[in-house]
Each structure stands twice: as structure tokens, then as C-alpha cells.
Image (cartoon, rainbow, N blue to C red; front, side):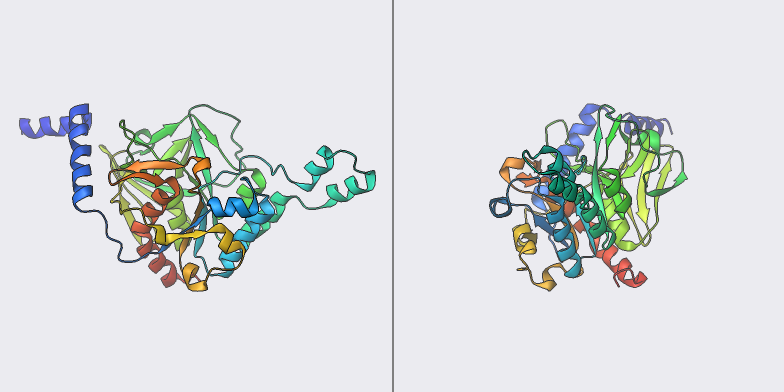
Length: 338
């Protein structure tokens, strides 16, 4: 009995040598047996070098982002998630142009100010689809939290799970008009280990006192039409995070050990091709879609146990993809794909 108690105490304490042994063992198994994709339920719409060359530097006008959503929705995307922030109003809003362009006559300025903002156009496109916005946890507070903006419903089963979660002092959200129009909101955070390698991805976190899901898990929730995320925990920590139809087992801190597949260029679709109407419907229909970038200048790259360079958006795609078959099946059974 004493030996059992000792092992239990060691597991809870989780000292650095034990942690190091665990991650190295994990890496070895990843290299020996990477995940083999039997299906590809996720697509990445890539703001790639070709898209930037054709449509100009990022950020694009939000009217163009609205066109991207509209085209993906028309092609049959189940849900659309942004691995991108919209934290400030569009600098290209007509009213902003009226205030900044020199030598305009008063009549033109008045007409510009009367036009709908680009943010309103994007919000309307979002309301016609199922869109998940990305948000970011910060080590400091940038603004008081707007308590009127919507959040995902949560149900706690067992012990209080918040004390085990990865926690951020601050939360950076998108502009209120977009937050209100979105079907879901998830944190973009991808946590690296001490050596800079991504092995675990948080599924549920705390940011500025608010409990929030990851971007990939929130996309699965939206796809299944579930209103509430269920968090199950015991005295040792969090054990699983669930939505209607399936649960994701996690470590005690609410993180998922990711069974990585190799970098997969076949799941990428150029944003330029979507905007130009060059994408076949069966490429997008019935898929979960992540919008992000692999462009070198935007610097969103990570390292995994089997890939020295992987776009951050593909890590979100791999997390979602490893669970998406079940999510899409649940969505179809519930009729939420209609």
C-alpha cells in the first residue's frame, strides 16, 4: 500500500526527470508510428504566397474575407474556423477612408461615411455560415473584458477543473461586431514544451478569468451543433472534454497528446483559388475548414516530433482531423449539415 501511495504521489508531483522521460518516449513512438490518415475531413484554406501576390499584403479588406466565407459556405463547408485574429476594426473601412484620404470633397466624404463598414459586411457573411473566430490568451490584460459578448456554454462534471487548466492573465478578442456574429470562439494557443516542440495542445483553458475551448475543439462543437462543452475531472485533474456524441481524453491540465501525421500538402487549398471560383465542390463539401497561412512572411510555423517545420494552422487541422470523422458523423446524424 505504501508503494502504491508513493507512486501516486510521484505521478501528481510529476518531477522534471519523469516529464523528460515521458516526452522522449512519446517522440520515439511518434517517429516509429506516425498517424496514418484513413480519411481527410479537414481542409486548410491557405493565405499563401500566391494569394498575397494576387490580392495584396495581409490583412486584406474584410469584404474580401467575407467573399471567402461566402464561397466556402456555397461549396458546402461544415464549419469554418480562423487561425487569424480580427482584434481591431478594418483599417480600410469606408468611414476610415473618409477621415484619412486627403483632398476629398465633402459630398464624397459623406457618401463614404454612409456606407456599411467592412466589419459589418464580414459579420453578415458569418451569420450566413458557421464560423469560429480565433482568440488569443495573453500574459497581461489589454482591456477590460466585455461581459456582454457571447461565450461557449460549459458544464463541469466532478471536481473543479479550472485550477488545473493552462491560464492566461489576459484575453485578446475580435471586434465586438464580429464576436456577436460568430457561431463559436476558440483560443489559438499552441503550447510548446521546454525544447520548443509541440506535443500537447490544450483543449480547454482559462484566459482573463474565462474558461474557453481551443480553436480546433470549438470547431468540432460548432460542427456537431452542441450548445455545451462538458469537462470531466477528479481530484487528480481533468480527464476528458466532451461534446454531444464523443469525448476527448486529456492529461490532467486539459491537454491532448497529439498523434501527429506527416505534413500533408494535399489538404491545402489556396485562398486565391477559392476567391476565383477555381475549387471543385467536392474539395470542400462536408469538410471542416481552417483558414490560416503558410506564407513565410507571416511567421506561423511550429516544430513537431516528426516535422521540423509545420504551419501552425496544420497543427490545429491535425487536432481537429484526428477527431473530425466522429464530429462530422454526429453532425450528419443530428441533421446539422442541412
